[in-house]
Image 1: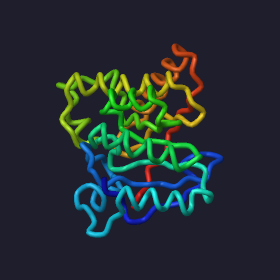
Image 2 (image 1 turned 135 degrees about the horizontal axis):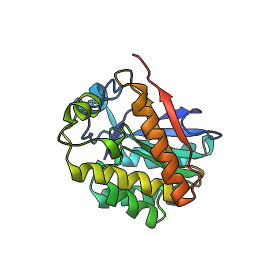
Image 3 (image 1 turned 90 degrees about the horizontal axis):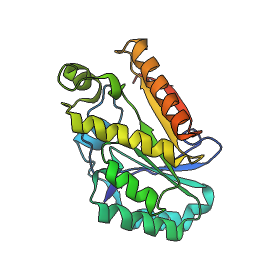
Image 4 (image 1 turned 45 degrees about the vertical axis):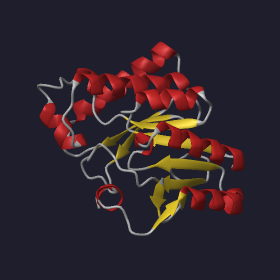
Length: 217
């Protein structure tokens, strides 16, 4: 695995925690509207980067400076499962804080396995559209404009399965979140919020939902 050359300490991504934000350079299947990371992290891999050994060494030297590690991207779960689990097991062995993974939800089986094996303490998942009310044939342009992909029914089922998985996990460190894309009407965000709240009620979960403002570059 390759990682962005700068590990970033942040106080905003995980409430009440000092977090080390680590960006994977392995890529992403999406090209979301206004993505700040796409050009530098996804489309063009930087010439200078850090390796997993660099990450381990950094955690051993400086792990006392933060109490959580957040692995993001791109899409962190795009890598081979064996590489993902090996990395997380090593991080778990040398770092005593919390491990958070951010994901778009496409890799639902990988997500379930990480939770089942206790390799993550929290998941931050992006629900970018109200998948449950969109038709992959009739609403292709919406998926293309917001997520940069051509959808199919299996993709939608995988995304919704991942949302349920995070809600069921119900860790205090989990989040379901949405970016308030300026190209979408408010009804889209109302549908997402209502869906998440209904699933939370069904699973008796307290996972928070955040509607985050779109950040203009």
